[in-house]
Image (tube, rainbow, N blue to C red; front, side, top):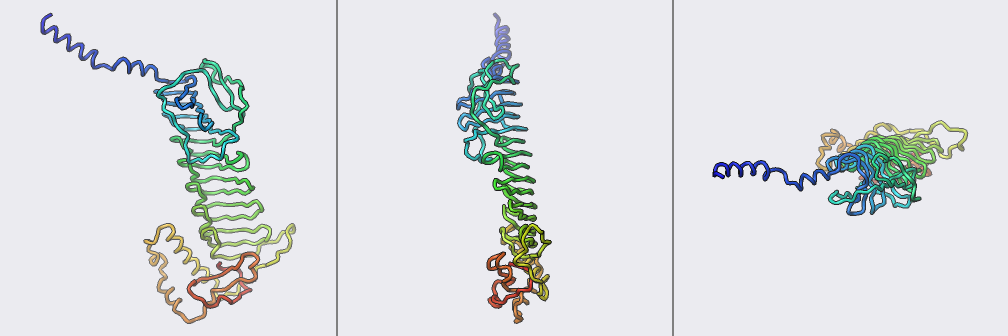
Length: 369
């Protein structure tokens, strides 16, 4: 063989064989799972039965978590729960935290078999044939009771979109609404075990924004919320007393507003403490002053101490003039006739003053407390 032919042979071998993809990698690709597949057993004891793409869980499938004994049945996208799906737990499982994610096992080693566990009518069923065409043929082999935990939309292994989460026994207490990154976010309804419910806006698992809270006894609050507490304008109706408070709230406590009697109903006894008429010289001014104080407190809570509250209120000079005035403070009083509704109801528009606290005005409807 001449040197020229020899070099030509080496050149051909080098580029046509040596630099091509190794055979083991080709065989490994052939072993990758695509489309429907029988049950795959993970190294940690978990099992998955369903569809695959490029060796990743993709499409519809059911995943059994060996450690937590939970089952996810729904859609997957590139090895993550994504789309519509249902997460189920055993009836004796403790309350599940939606912020926690189930452990995920990478498919590095697996055993292919025909056994398939899935939730059907609340009972764990088993599929025991290797025929992929019989994926919907089940035979009940266990009496282990399961219940729904979450039913709805997923993204990146977390609750995202619209879904329902069931607490405790999965019947009386549940949340139905929107989620983001595993937390209540946006509009939703929460039904509580005691019979009360909340309809409104949520932010990071807390009532936040506009919402209505209906208590079991018929009392009702409708208004604004912040970080799980009543904050801002809102109305509270006392069903049996036939009275309504309307005004400002702070940290879940009514601070500045009015209480009025509403129409009595024959099914309830005559009210014991009717609201007396208001005889303040300028009740609107009292409410406005207190409202500004609450607004300042709320702005500091949201934006911090760096907020330019003087520029926002634009009443700093007027407030200083009022504080230096020698006129008696008529805005502080205790509403004695309402002490059975609220204990020690104290109206204070200027907390630094110590005069007038014993003055009783029994002829006014509630202004601030």
